[in-house]
Length: 241
Ligand code: ZN
Image (cartoon, rainbow, N blue to C red; front, side, top):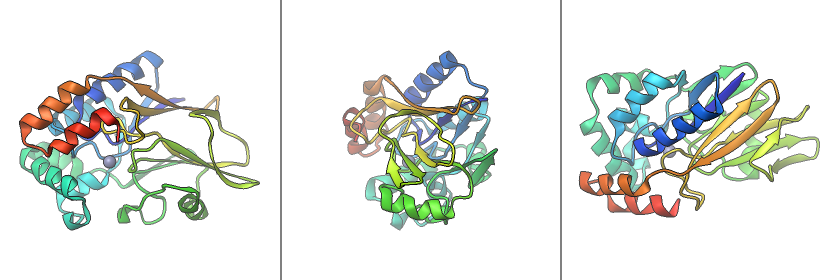
């Protein structure tokens, strides 16, 4: 089975459409979404509609929780809070209902999908380094865990030597190893590469890839500025930061 993993779309419809076009080219059996469909960007309703139509299953992210009032917005940065409040005002009732029903995690075969961390996922902690990963590997029951949240593509591997970061964004799953894989963000990359990012796994071949796709950044930036969202949210897209 070939699966595309998309995460952190953040209401960026141009990035989402570009990624879905690429996914169509590489041909997959399923598309899974790891949450944060909304927040930061100018097209939350359009992104939710497209996810509902195209994606097989999605889980919830902290931005959905923020918009729904389930996570206190005081824990968000100022720009994230302003974007959550803006998003809450523009979302349709139908789309609010859709995000309110998204599950916190999914287990498919020997894979866990969760927006933040295997342990206490609703605390919205990050896995940013080996130290964070070592702790989460102690909790992780599955062989592979896909996460989003930090918007930084990275793979942590637990093997007989301990825990390390994968040196390549294309690799083969090894026997006796466990993996925590962040495929990066569709709509707001933060690894200084402004192209949209998504993940791909071929379960039968054991192959994983993190794939980048260019999209029309300028168009999104203009919409962000016109919509009254913080200007910083437009500027950061061209830096990929
Ligand atoms: Zn996010």
